Image (cartoon, rainbow, N blue to C red; front, side, top):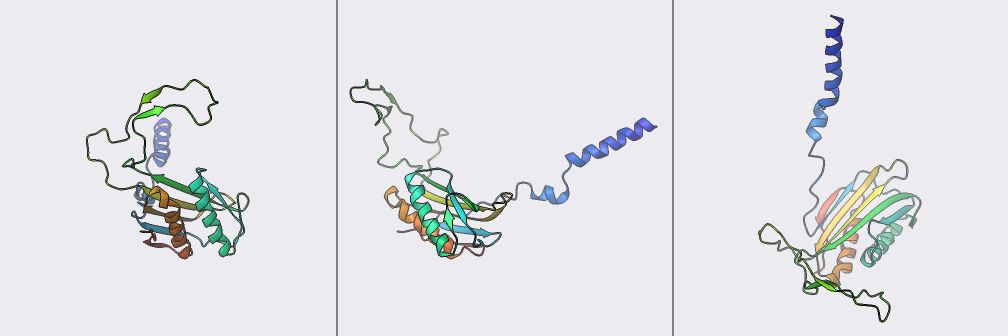
Length: 204
């Protein structure tokens, strides 16, 4: 009798871990948004950007990202925030530029060759056939042109809570990507204090 009661109690406790509560079950798979469409920007202001110091940190350090980080820091300082690379709340910045069509200036024939840093007279590295970037399933590739996407996420200094997020994208050529990024950033900060979805201001 006692053994049967023990088994029943064990099953009840185990089911509490296996079966999620209704509120949690409804949220599974629905909490991640799709994000704005190409050419739009979206701001999610869980809290307003407080007038505290903000450290703007890049997820990938490259020339374009550094130039666009400068514009973010300008707009933050215009709001009255002290800005820097460390200390205070952290704003992570992700800048991605990709061209699914490959572009006309991409070398698709070979990979390898002599690197720029090789000393004069070094033996050249053999060039190897390259694998073109494309779909392997036979489907028609996307017709979307080269795309720039900028994503900003503000975390609190205590506990890493997400306070504010924003993202925007433009279809743009590489030589216009900085101007497109600055336009996205300006549109984001024009609407930074409230939830907003709208045109990203992509240059023509």
